[in-house]
Length: 367
Image (cartoon, rainbow, N blue to C red; front, side, top):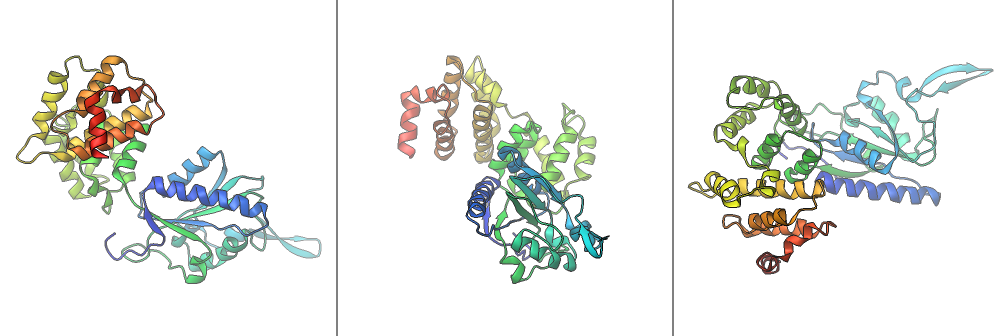
């Protein structure tokens, strides 16, 4: 990261962060069963990278209940503790409406925690330590996950002191284009947008340009079939939510006809592989310098298409995949990565790609 950003924990992709968090969740379940203290997790990362969505996805996949709060919106301690009321001869607190009451498993997400006022941060410390406050307690099998933007740089955040930091375990989430591309394929993001990010992965770390704003832009152009014909509108849409450098890069992407990259489905179903696949690809990648970035993009898209859609290829489709793998222009490291993805799947039919002796030898030679 630039601008002297300060984060905590290992820098990881969303996939690695998910594995880390799910392990801590399971560890905490065991700890609670044994009467030990559970440990909250804080996910650090720049804005728009998908920290909040990651927690929601984990909760959904594990079938956890979850509750979301944004303490930056809290004006008073009552927003955290609840409001007092007289109960007989004593004053008690009525917990806020967002406090979960049903037994878990569940996740309380404290989002953008270090954008909260310092008083609110200090009030949260007891919650992180004991999973309770003076006025309420989290139900059984509930856990706490926090998200935070980096300290330093140009973020308007409240620094957390060591007493608070040491109450949590930390991980920093960074953008990984290949991991994002797999998510984007599942989410039906415009394929032209996926290709753009895979070819220009560095653009996702801008000020306005983030994975979140890129998806907003790609959704806005999804209905525009001919981007070059509608270039002024495309530029206006891009400039509305992305950095100037990203807008320029996307215009170049259009003008170089990279929006017309062949889709995996067309490679898979080509009737004449040389005419429909080999020649168009070579025309685009054989420049003064071989466009390895484009070849890597095509291979990643092919891998994601095959595995996400659990394609059980027919014999002609298997032959097309084999022909794609054997294309002379594809570098060995890209070829190996695609072959490993195929071998790591539990799709028996897809693994028939390895029935070609030449393809099998490519894998053996490069392992």
